[in-house]
Image 1: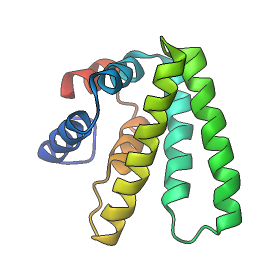
Image 2: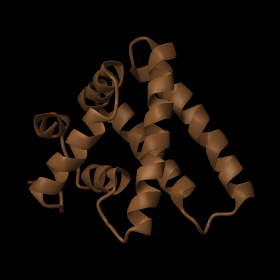
Image 3: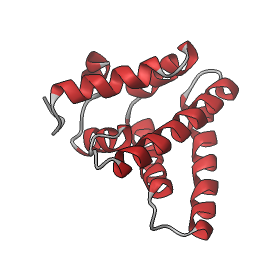
Image 4: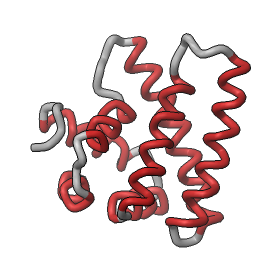
Length: 136
């Protein structure tokens, strides 16, 4: 398997993600996984910005600038890559907030397998969308 994480952890994180979001969010996540290069690049940026927001060493002024970039990126992703952009933009915002909180909790508990960490590793490893979808 392409991720440098145990299979149980991958499945647990994906099931947790799916169980904590609505059907619309699940559809949006499937659209993310199916998308090609453009969306993968934007998803990589999204994860980087979320990781920066979760970083305790980043000042509040820097976080405000990051938050603005994050909101603009979410808007661009929803418009360019997803059906029903108005609905899916709010879904992506909810996912980003959930992922940031999850990552902060994982860091606080010295747990290395937050959703952001695993998605970041998957993207850097070049996981193909079909493989991601099969895991989901």
